[in-house]
Image 1: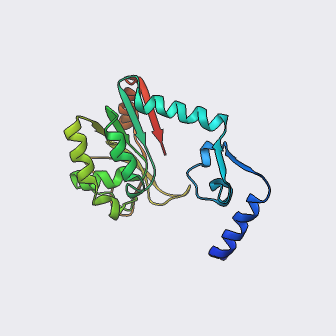
Image 2: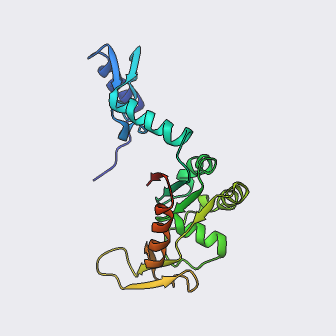
Length: 202
């Protein structure tokens, strides 16, 4: 269907209508708290608070981020490095190891070692910050774990030609990396088993 951009005035009016329904806004939806949706921001309420579930989740986060059992492992996925720059930089101060997976792993692999990545996801904006991320990790002694082998396909779908590839061979033109391979899975499993605290995002 067609996309319609919301009229800012209509959004304001819609949000104001919520404030007429109650005196206090209580957010208890931790899983969607990062979204600036009308029902999530509590605009127009003089009194805002968090519910029991939100408080529990924030307490758990504080424990993990402020006084974690060591060693600490972060597992990061997702498509773009640029979406997670702040998260990555902050986590580097707190973790011992970081597994970088998902689509953004190909950006790291291309920038770090010039690996051929075929038509795999590549984040041009994120690529500019990868050297800075790696420099900070090295300075702090954080081990960045990247995949070393891959399941690749000629297309994103069930009817693509599926092959295997390694970091050494790279991913040929016309193919994209869709998952990590058995060696990477084993490497990730060892990192997980050796950790006392795990933070997983994406």
